[in-house]
Amino acid sequence: MKKMIIHGGKRLTGEVVIGGAKNSTVAIIPASILSESKVTLDGVPRIQDVDNLRAILADMNVTSELTECGLEIDPTQIISKPLPNGKIKSLRASYYFMGALLGRFGRAIVGLPGGDDIGPRPIDQHIKGFEALGATVSNEHGAMFIQAPDEGLHGAKIYFDMVSVGATVNIILAAVRATGVTVIENVAKEPEIIDLATFLNNMGAKIRGAGTDTIRIEGVPHLYARNAHTIIPDRIEAGTYLALAAACGNGITVKNIISEHLDSFLAKMEEIGVHFDIGEDSIYVYPTGDLRMVTIKTMPYPGFATDLQQPITPLLLRAQGEGMIVDSLYPHRVRHVPELVRMGANISVENDVILLRHTDQLQGTDVTADEIRAGAALMIAGLMAEGTTTIHKVENILRGYDRVMEKLRGLGADVEMVDENDNAGVAAAEVFQKKAL
View (cartoon, rainbow, N blue to C red):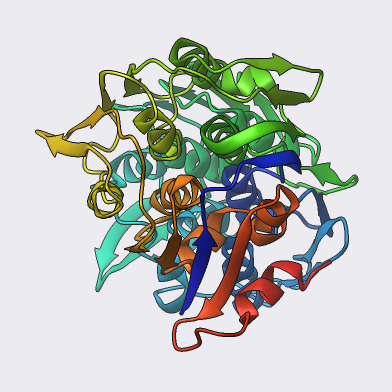
């Protein structure tokens, strides 16, 4: 285990370049096994979840190689193999192998997903979709057994009872090689869904409507990757650095951004009182003055993203007045709150609503990052705080943030990464984020 040590209280300046979208990457890597030729992905973020997915690919005899630009995957020698537990438990997105294996082989045995503990995330909509395509699904000893009929999967009309990114991705992966036409209604509209559809369409899939309420898929018998696919910029990483820039920046430019993907977030930043200039693919955040407290309610895209409610929280603590955050998607996503209280934050949780009040100054102390976005909130809080903040379980931050140490230092932050039992030297966690360069 590693820990991040932050010597806070410094005003940061400079520019930071956003990496490829984590939530696209963790869907497109499993989707790559649908190809009958080699796949090249550009702009892949250097995050631990990518290594975890590559390890799962290796178990299926799929080779992969990180290059300076991205990731090369060769699924041409893939073997159908159960993935019951083990590496599958390391991240929630591993459940995309359910749809990908079902689409490629007509069967899948995949352990129930792991990932961050942010509250219940059932997979009933996934199962509903698989069954509508003709598959039988059973849960045996903690693994999902999914089997297509002898004649293969068939097109179907599917209506999701609730909007689900995971279910939308999984049914696309299963239906893209099914016989006939599949129509999925009440689907997720996130940019990462569009990115996945673009990747598959470039291999010969026939997917229409990604980014709208209804997706129509005409199944095809074969998929072949012919060109490299570039992952879209990570809107969550971008929002995190924009919040950081507003909270403790002295003029920061965040580059490689699609600002339209951040409309609801940027609207809240303006409401808070943050001033910024939007360029063609970058945003410059001015040093902030007086800020106003606001109410934030997370919603499915294009609403305010649940993954950004924690990173924006330290910024809100600088604002005058009282505010609240209501996470309508994951109301129990509050594990950062007691850690911020340890730093002196005037913040509490009542009936799953986060209540915030102005906090004059945060103080550095020992805190724990129990999941990715909670870790991001603590990282920003540590940069704002007086004194030294030590963040334990920093691997959770590395799971979702591309080359974070390099980027923070590029802005002038005084940060280091050390082993939990080593208070002196910089540990291998930093090397991990640079090893593919």
